[in-house]
Image: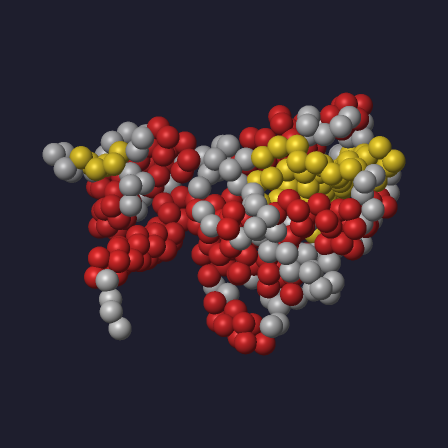
Length: 351
């Protein structure tokens, strides 16, 4: 066997970057939970000063800061032995209620990785692993990862892009938010459209319990309710809008869900479908975003679909063609992409 040393070392260099990033995930989560990023964003500081600001141990903080600097997440001044953050990095790492919050993605990753022992067996047997069977960090991390995108785009861009929906909700419409998880999307819509009513549903009991708490905290329980139900069986009809955020591709029976959505809409209602950004072919998805989603999909999306009846396992990189096919097979006659972000494609399906 002839080994090209330069190619080998280039691959080893890639490995070093990937391994460092993998281990760094835990430190990003710690940086968020301990307030280390927020303390550093307040101004340049030594390890001792960051520890004082956060009530943490200086030796731990020093090692954390060095790793963060090596990864380019914080800046290091060797002359003063101090660390700092640029405004852009502080924007992305310090505000869980902002329009970009990266620690949530790492929390989701850590929760997903806890499934490695079960996935090893699932690969051999073809068995599925339900969403509800994962580590709790999957549920909390998922909300933290996706909520900033909804906060940035849902009310200001995605709903206005739908045919006649914004005016209907301003007058007082009815909305079903399926696969709502902790209810982030449901609450955001309820806050924006106080004259409308909203029903969030998810098959995971724990998520629905948390969604109820979030609605109470936001003061929207007068117009928001939640139910434990799958996308193929949520209650109610006559909805002006049905929404599904980053969940259709996870389902074992997305066609059944699409048919139920069709039957639950008014004649001029819309289905807002938000899915991971993806092309229709594998080659189109061989990029950094595709890598993120394919890897999450092996831990979460495909195993969940395989745990359910229906015969589908679309995966997180299903692409527009596959989502369109599900909708047309279910009887929707109009389908279009209405918006996109670096992480999501947004579609509207109508009767």
